[in-house]
Image: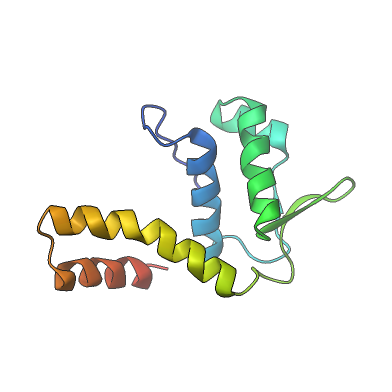
Length: 124
């Protein structure tokens, strides 16, 4: 899987890394049980601080996307990603609200917004 980080972005690097790993899982580029590079190895490969990679990995672990074993290393959760529950759906709604509000302020129609969502969803 190719990782492309925008070092000039306002979005933190660990968030970009987290999001790209989740996208890789969603696209099937990263399979359940597949090994990921160690924190130090990935940091060296993409030229960022290992603490940044560690932070992304810890978030992914907390969210159930990966497992971190002392002996096996980092792997995509072999049981797959936990399914959406009420807590996740509430968080999703909270994260979508500002995007929808900004779209309304910028006169993006509901149809255009939904079309974009559908197009992006279909990419996965």
